[in-house]
Length: 490
Image 1 (cartoon, rainbow, N blue to C red):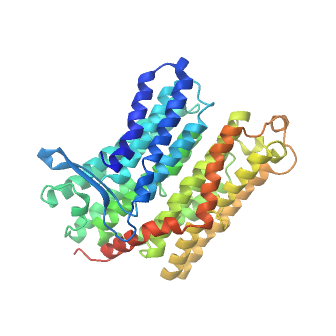
Image 2 (image 1 turned 180 degrees about the vertical axis):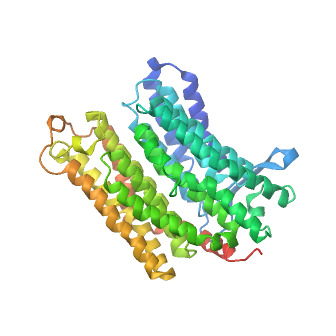
Image 3 (image 1 turned 60 degrees about the vertical axis):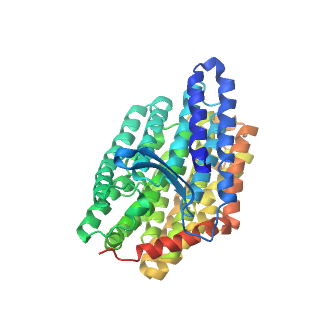
């Protein structure tokens, strides 16, 4: 079995084992199996980085085997510099999520842990799939475990939130399916994504395909105005669900733009770039202002995620190397920072059972270690230099300056708005005198919570201080991608 197959199927097999165990009286064993499974799943992805050749833009670790011969569907996997980091990020975040649920989830523990491990395998499959049907199967399969995670372990309105999540993302994907079938017929019966990249397509076909893919990926990102499902889902989802949703699942949509929309329909992508840029700027500015007035911490961070992902799509559709690389770096850094922000909210919620900012105040007085970590993540969320949140934003702003000064000016308002809503929350929750009796009796984080947040803190600081290992992997692939997208197919 190849390295990519190992990365995909190891967590799925461990997840299936957990589902088979079945009883809550085995919860302790279940937790340890889940932790071992997530660590093993991460370890099998490390050789991908160790053996990756940064000097080529070609797909690496390629595996191909016939799957459905009649329709020429293959089990075809491969990664390049664009997708490699997301495989490692997914496996890494899964370990953190398993640790986060160690004491919090007490019912149906095997199903909760099993769902997350299976979801991890499906998401890695999305980033590795080189066959369109395989991509679509993994892309849609991610909905099932996440739907169950929200619907079973979520808050009071969990069914509404789970259904809204499922409906939005499924409806968007149906237009993508139509686009895939059209490309299959146009290519003479091939579902190979790299073959589709070379297809000569008319302007009308490219435009229709672009919007077919846009329907699926814009919802997943989520872009304005199809972002409304995200705050509801985050508020109702359990802490681990919010962390994985923000850290990984939103990236599936942005990744789809790079793998499908832009290389298959480059002319339409350039023609309609103004629309994506406009929607991205609305997300950065308007959604940032919406975040400012939130009273619920989870909603504030959810809207913050929409604003940050607006930066990602803005970087992609500027069509220069700094923009695309900056968008990719932003996706990775947002994976670390957003997961950490939601896990910090989960730590407070586990103790006080409230996410309302007004119910806190002066947390630093009773939880100094936790407050130090939480403020670090908040600073990264606001784009403070020397944190992961700064690197991608700075690259995208520089790319925007190259394209248009006023575009960069509008994009840079994100730094002001991000600081405004993040610092507003930090001031009200963590600083000042102790707000009430609930805060007075809080206890600082335990060893498990310290490990969970500590590894994310190391990742946030390492990426902020030394981003070169991240950008080195993607540089050649990004250059190849832009060279391909610059070639007209008309």
